[in-house]
Length: 521
Image (cartoon, rainbow, N blue to C red; front, side):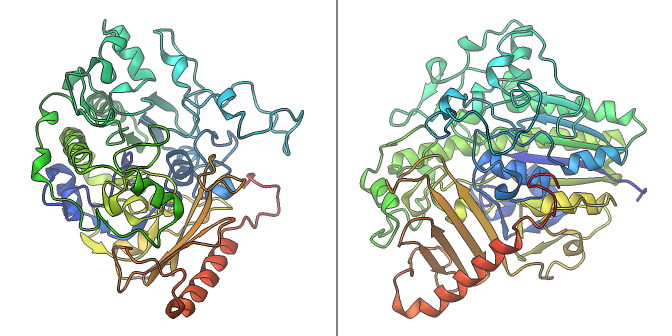
């Protein structure tokens, strides 16, 4: 292999590890992703550092925990001065391109919308950032709703070429929205449930978009990636292409044939769909009590009915199959470019989805593995395929990519390179994976926003909720489905103590050790 390999990093949004063929799912059609996995190292125990879009995407970019890089929740843009592995690649001579959903910056939560969470009446903040006005508005969805060009810097967190597809499903904005307008398509006449060709009757998040397949965001991204491969082919520099699909995040709005590809009645319910939640957290019990009703916003978790679950699953599988077909076209273009033998392909997602597990749906406020475990595949042309059950994390991706590119990591990175696992998949890198979550809301009514810290080991999972006497403890050896909460079980006192100590140790390990002020590493 030449000195510098190329990279194609394919990412999906809100995609569970088992909603793909190579993840063990026998109902879904994903032959192209499966083909990549069959030639790659598949990581079966890959977890997120945060089960929310912006915090975990920022962690993937920086190799640092949300509590360290500062993007702790959706609505907080990644500090413009933050170092990223993309910046390091560019400095090392790479052509760096992003196509699709970035979400390193806020795309829709206005400053006014944050007023109830942040005291903006104070005249100054803890840190005087001295950043340019509107530095954090580059992905704002409202800025792209005309054909007028949006002036972007020549370096977006390290990307020299940037094409945004913001938001989710068929309601995406960004450069994609402007492309629709330029081609005589009025998005207001095509996007959203009000224009849907078909819809599920019992939940507003499931419908067949009026957009045809050729105008759908997934297709747009695939076409742009193919064009970028052709541009990169003519460039003498090695390339790094970030191909980021907004699907299969809800709303579930597959186009054309993908709406009818899967039949809801063909799916079985998860075995714990009607789990006994008498020992679960209070907000989970409230969701179960209100089965079929989404009590909060469209992004909030809830307990679906059987019909809601089955119709959502059929629609989501359709979205994934469209992604898979698009990935097949991208891989064909890569092969035709003559660069395939020198290109490392990575596939992963920013977080998962509860999707019926424990009778729950969507994300936030819980750390069940359906939400925290994601698909992760690394194909390296000079390494043998295999599977690894070693605990790995999304925080490891930045350091891994730099290691594979033979680029020196920067000070302050907190993950581990997975390069050694490509040859030795059984090697142990860490004893546990730390997962953080800091929300804006207060579902417990205890006077402060929800804050969760979780540690997952090969033996157990513990989740500590700030301000709560109750938490979660699961023995993963005897209860891999996380169905029996042992938090108050006297027989689990030793396990609980060991896990709390291990959680505390890991939280201290990732605390910023930089002698400079925070966020400057």
